[in-house]
Image 1 (spheres, rainbow, N blue to C red):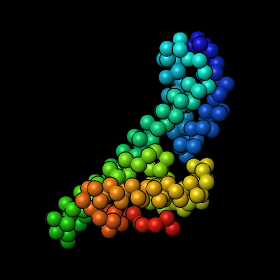
Image 2: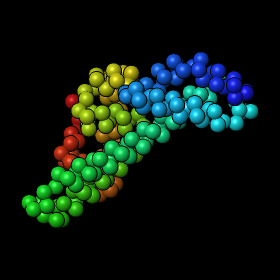
Image 3: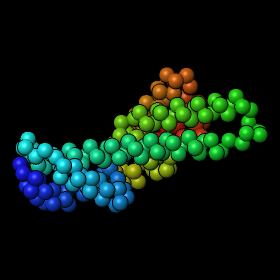
Length: 184
């Protein structure tokens, strides 16, 4: 397929691509950024082997969206770590407890970052932003039962990660005072 044909396909599919990317991002700016990056990558593509422009465009958009979400997740875990550091009053907490708290927070940040993308989004919306399952389902355009499945999976995976890192479930509940057990 020619570059011109690929550009034509991009513009024909733009409304569908926009709706598709909205499943990953709530902010219109993020959606537009992914769309623009998709166009740039399509423009730079070697167009010889592209048999299905629609599949190709959606795959490129999805890969860019997932990459951006991974970057945002890394930024969020960094923010969590900074927040934990700023909340420590070094005068009233013994040094060994401060260090343990920082290590626990780091382990939790890694646990959340290791979750699959959709599970991580659901988990972070619930545990960090305090959104309810119905609100999350609406935002991500998935069913409430899928949200609950992701929350359960996220909590189990984080618990397993924390256990493997030498922390118990009580350590998971105590991370930054933010994570609560259960889906409610």
